[in-house]
Image (cartoon, rainbow, N blue to C red; front, side, top):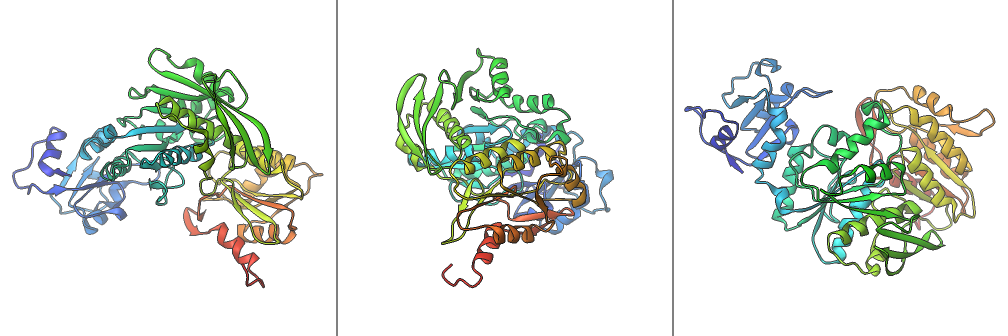
Amino acid sequence: MRKLSEIFQFFHQDFPKNHQDIVLHHLTQDSRLIAQNSIFIALKGEVYDGHQYVLDAFQNGALFAIVEDRNTLSQKIDQPYILELKTIKNELAAFAEWFYHYPSRALDIYAVTGTNGKSSIAHFIAGLFTTLEKKAAVLGTIGNGVYPLLQDSPLTTLDSIAINDWMAQFVKKEAYHLSLEASSHALDQRRLENIKIKTAIFTNLDVDHLDYHGSMDNYFYAKRSLFMMPSVEIAIINIDDDYGQKLYRLLDKKKLTCFSYSIENKSADCFFEIVETIQLKHKVKVYWQKRYIGICLLSIPGKYNVSNIAASFAAMMANGYELAVEKLEQLKSAKGRVELLEYRSKAAVVIDYAHTPDALENVLIALKERLSGKLICLFGCGGDRETSKREKMAMVAKRYADVCIVTEDNSRTEPFNSIVKDIQKGFSLDDHYTVIEEREKAIYHALEIAESEDVVLLAGKGHETYLDKNNKRHYFDEREIVKAYYSRGDSSL
């Protein structure tokens, strides 16, 4: 909440004498999200130009607008409450932080970056705080809010305005511990600038987003920038990953307190030794800085999730929260992360967000470990995005799955046939796979051919409840589709 005169003063502008000194409560870059007493910020982006929506913003109730270039407004607007600031894009992070009264300074913030595992680790950290009876919040792909009551999120990492708005709400609700996902796009675009992140966590790096970054080196250095932020004090690094080892070597140990975690290397600060796998559950011995902490049974499938839990445990321990291993047994999978749907006398269905070769391999291995029947893998690749991973996705799927079904997955504006041609490069002429464009029909086909002892993996959508076609999002929830199919003629479901 700030007065209009204070805003002019912040930007070193003279407050016009004819302006009423109104009180403003909210900032937004989306004209559809105007709330009472809002300021609309119009920026020229890569896809959309906010200047086209200034009139809409005022019609929706905005009281004030800040624009980069008044001459680019789509229509002549007879509205005195517009401030032109050509430098607003560079000043936005500092302005948002100031406007919401520096909320990050009141929070204990854990930021997770890497290709895979960000959502799970963010949720596991919030879950562990909950076991300690402390309020925790999450900002990320699966949702935003005070854990576990989350609202759908439009992005992995929100813009700096939305992040500060959410953090101000968390402070009001006394949820002082925040775990958030730091995407490479957000880091490159400086959306987290000025946010007082104390603990930074690196998971791994896999082929993804090269359409944006251009090379794996650029992708890596975008991730590394999180650990260069001046507020970061503690670094938690996965040394089972080659890029994690590289990052660990490059970090300045004089400025950062660095901790490693591993499920393979006993010399790591945090070592989770898998001693037994029992029906997809893992019995694990936990060590912290060579000290044996205890043994526990983790109920979340996949060795990669053991690694994710190790990262979360390390982050907590590095910040002085002594955790008994029994707390780890209380953790549950996040929505769309190895999410198991079970129906009586039917094939089990697993929904997972895996959309990179490494993520798909991890979940397929996890399911293959303790499977008596066939493993049916349904997957696709997103349109208008990184193309080199498509062939690798097919190679991974055919290596571990007994049946492969290729289908759509957020085609956006790219023709499905173009995506399929890239995927098919990973299959040979002798490989048996099925291509069904419509994802709903593809799911029905997978369930039709599955027997009761089989497992059907629906990969790629995870928590998402939409399909993006021609840049329009259509409602699509795989859970409902599975339930509808299995409910045919069975009133007990």
